[in-house]
Image 1 (spheres, rainbow, N blue to C red):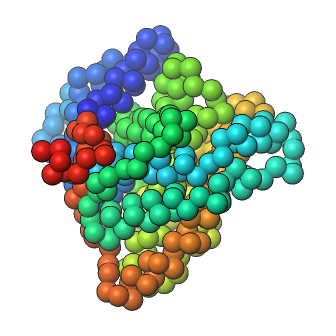
Image 2 (cartoon, helix red, strand yellow):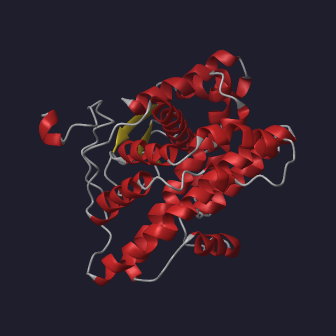
Length: 336
């Protein structure tokens, strides 16, 4: 399973010999169970089951069973909208201080397929509550980039939940902390774990934020889609940015996706040289601009759906083809 592959990647940190990794993952190796549970959310959950012995606890990490389907299709949508030839040399120019470079120069504006695919993806998950059942073929370069993004995203989400456990967020004495503060803390720990794994696997620093950026843009798209379907009110990244600037409410369980993205970018910049930080910033900026361009076209469609009586589904009920190793070009009926 994809979940267990992420655990295996994290467990390899024991081999680095670094005390913080050896101590944490040696202790947690047989104390964490990873599984799926329908939640209708892209975020995972770390749980300490009731009745566990505080001196020797066992933990659960749960993700919605369709999480990997959503990230799988989302990564293909974003990768297929990027001009890779332009991305390489423009990111290098931006890294050395060329302020004339624009991320929008890397977007394939003439190709309508990514827009249609994203529209289908959001409607299937948010409007109908079911995952997509077919995927058009992509050229190898697009698929390879998308695969790298989704592997990073999956690793970060699982590492984030490990972050809650490592920080002690699940213990009773930590329960007074505001939930959104715990989320930001788990993001930082999760990112450090993710960065260590990607470093060990030979991933270039400039591209290590890509998967987390994809995940946060997926959260933002879901927030905007659900808001428009539920209220009939136009909503975009500007609204999310305003919410981020005003700060979380005491009752919020999570900060906004943009708050979390900005915090990770700051964390990255504090640990890497300026040229690598700027190259990573360029790639993250490209994902933000792509999301903006997608939503300019898609947002009005969900307002129309609201007028027609459509409302967001509370729970996704996808067929989890990717998680099960199913050929995603098959429909569920064909796979059975």
